[in-house]
Structures are given as structure tokens and as C-alpha cells.
Image (cartoon, rainbow, N blue to C red; front, side, top):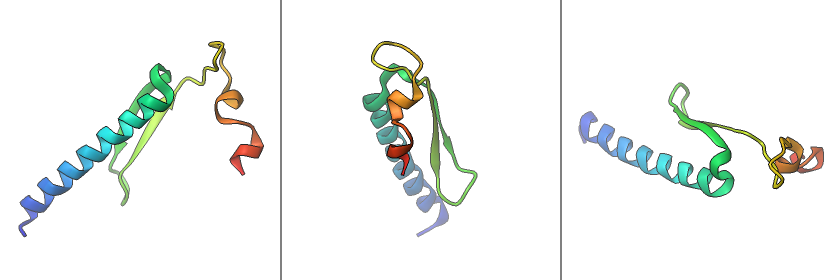
Length: 73
């Protein structure tokens, strides 16, 4: 397979993955997502997502959104 064909396949797979991640972020966090960007600067492509941690009352509450130390363990 030529490099061009491989690049096209990889690009299509990456685009499908990127869309799936964006859909998951939207389903999980909705309009709390401020920005999500694809990073290709390392061996494994990854997405950095930035969100405002609002709780159900609309208050900034990171602990309420992600849990406290017990959930990080």
C-alpha cells in the first residue's frame, strides 16, 4: 500500500474517532465544553477538552462534577 493511501485511511479513521469523541463530550458535558482540540504532537493522537465545571445549580463546582479525592483513586 502506498503511503498516500495509508495516510488517507489513517485520516478517515482519525476523523471518525474525533467525531465520536466530540459526540461523547457533548453527550456527557453539553454546553459546559468550551473547547476541544486534537493533538498530534505525540505518538498517540489525543484530544484536550476544556470545560467549565458547573453543577446542576449552575455554580462552579469541580468537586461536584468529578467527585472528590475518593473518586480519583
